[in-house]
Amino acid sequence: MVRHPKPAAIAKFAASGKKSGKKDLGRMMMSYGNVYVAQVGIHADNNQLLKAITEAESYHGPSIIIAYSPCISHGLKEGMGRSMECIKEAVKCGYWHLYRYNPELKKEGKNPFKLDSKEPTGDFREFIMKQVRYSALAKQFPEQAEELFARAEIQAKERYDTYKILNDLQYGEE
Image (cartoon, rainbow, N blue to C red):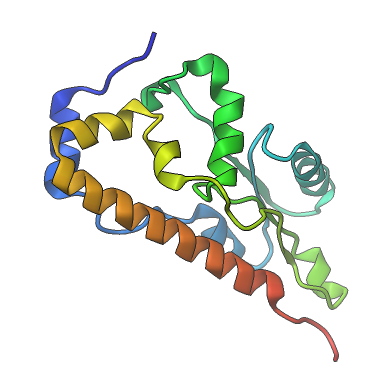
């Protein structure tokens, strides 16, 4: 059974629109400098997931692992039984990015940030339209929805570009 968002909730979202990008909890935590941070997606890259869990567990300090997790409120059109495939698609299209930040690497003169996601190749719009929370908005408020979807895709690309810059930073002596 697919749960449909309430029309009032959709109207409120469309009326005001989300003008700012999604908050980036991982980057906020990285700014402390002493927190191990990983962003993962179960089934998207299980090797990356296991590395993140192992590194977080062995890190002597605060650790946070942020996982993409579809829920019933997303309204997956294919059903919650396909949530693992949904996570994989979220990473493939660039909706969700995989990375690890290990402050211990700075002590070794190495870059503490490791971008584990590859360049997105999937269709961002196709991915979000598989969720009722987005497709219902498109049906009720097509013009506003189109603007919000385009903005969300641009912001996801900008996040990935920022992660690439962090990944390519040089540390230590040259």
